[in-house]
Amino acid sequence: MTILDKINNNKRIEIAEAKSKVSLEQLKESPYFKRKIISLKTALLADGASGVIAEYKTKSPSRGVISDTAEASEVTESYVRAGASGLSVLTDNYFFGGSFDDLAKARWANPSTPILRKDFMLDPYQVYEARAHGADVILLIAESLSKSLLLELAQTAKEIGMEVLVEVHSSEELEKLNPLVDLVGINNRNLKTFEVDIQTSVSLGALIPEQYVKISESGISDPESISQLKEVGFNGFLIGETFMKTDNPGKACAKFIEQLK
Image (tube, rainbow, N blue to C red; front, side):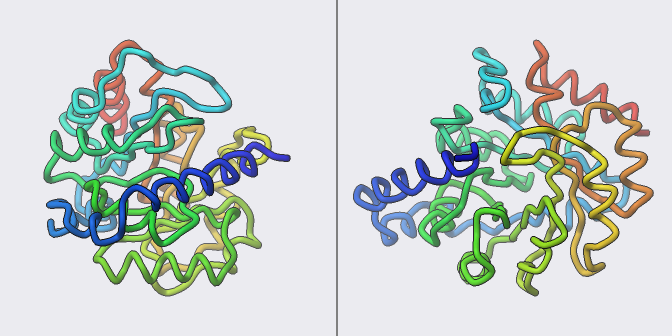
């Protein structure tokens, strides 16, 4: 059984528990459910945008504990001050140490910045959860979803005004894309082995249709990599561990973005 299989099996249990505690109607009553969505796509394509989607996560299966002192509102606010175009917040707790509390804190601290709910989405219920807790964008991992389920989740997101980022790791997974998708992320990390190779973005990037905004995810640790990725059409760069493993993630983000200029 791969790491991704273990994560998804645990996620199905979590989803069932969440549904038993909070109904869809209760999620729809959240004040965040009525707020105007902030477009990540627009932010990434804006003139002068850094393209950096700075991620808040404190733990991962590959690294273990990344930070045991970071606080979500403080770190994400410092990311935005540093010039990040968007934010990504992990909400999976068991494997990544995330929570809806982290997402809510990031939303409160950064009311004008697009936020991605980073999790393993397997059920339309989770899309409503994302909206109810302040996210603007959902992540759909193609490897975890059939083409029909990916379409269903994208349709649910569009019905409630959210943007859709689909993550792929192989050319075969591109067949699951549909017109409702806004952004396509190429994960440089193999979710079966958690090995990282940034050349995955370079090779797959050329195969992504022009209608989608392209994002490179994982393993980006130096500004030179972004220069290379921009040359092959990428507008977004999701970076987390590079910043979070330092004593001051916001400062690390600011230094990184300054070097892009």
